[in-house]
Length: 398
Image (tube, rainbow, N blue to C red; front, top):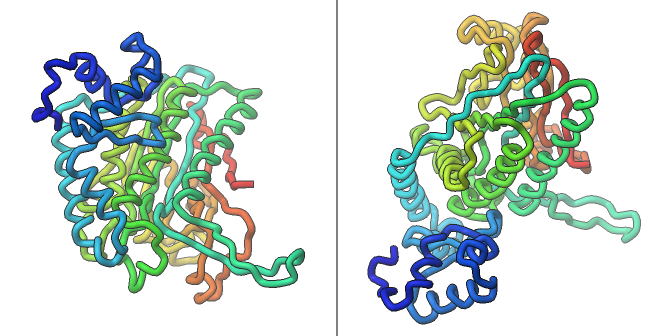
């Protein structure tokens, strides 16, 4: 990206570029100069040598912006309807570029520790729908009138993911009085970005275009991942794609935006140098099977199943079929935004994950209005050598 820039007479500027992506303090430490000197290098590169540098707010890092980054930022300033095709083409090109880069680096692999008498700490998060905007009208007693309030949007979604991580660690600290934890599993159930053209007139509900949805979701999940990686012996990330990750209903599963989100997240975690992270997702299916302390876990998005697990005869029959097909001890699903914890045949636990997104007009139209003032965020639970689920908590944003 800087091959055409002559820095032969400016070795310190070339050295600065060699440290990117990185924060200003870390580069200052590496180069043994003041932070103000690093800022001077950056300004000279941009103003004198036309090197395009950009700042990643979530990661607190400066990086060399390539043509795709410039294209995406340009597209972000145009109307949502007019950019869909071009943004999708750029995202597909970025996916191919990411795949080539990921193939040149070592996969994130880390064997679970699983010490005797310890437990594994698990988190379930899905349906964050980065990109959606939800406003609600409610009666304000103080004002004596109806007021409209923004209850969901990209920045709110990021705050909720951060709150989920903070509260999860509070539960970890609380449960540490009775047990100890080694590994952590972060289950991501898809619909991280909300997509475009998944349903008629979806553009009315979207605040940011597809490319920004991916950027925002990656930023929030990266912060959550590095926090967990620093708190546990290993972090095991498991992800499945959802139905909202597509740019259109007929898109192939390999073009799913959730998969691009996972690839970007994988790439950033590899660059960060964490050696205790194991990252696995599925591209061919909307389900994934994995082992936690010897127990078989079945992870799926849930759009192919009914909302209920065992409340009706038909749903109970369907889940008995899934038990027969995948032979799991524990399963989890998202999609319906309705949290629940049930057991198939009173034996096999199934977690139904909530969505941090507050309900908009659609639930009202089908007679299920969301009248809450808070949102459920996700599940946390423990796994021991003796039991596939030892305890569980449903976390909310209050």
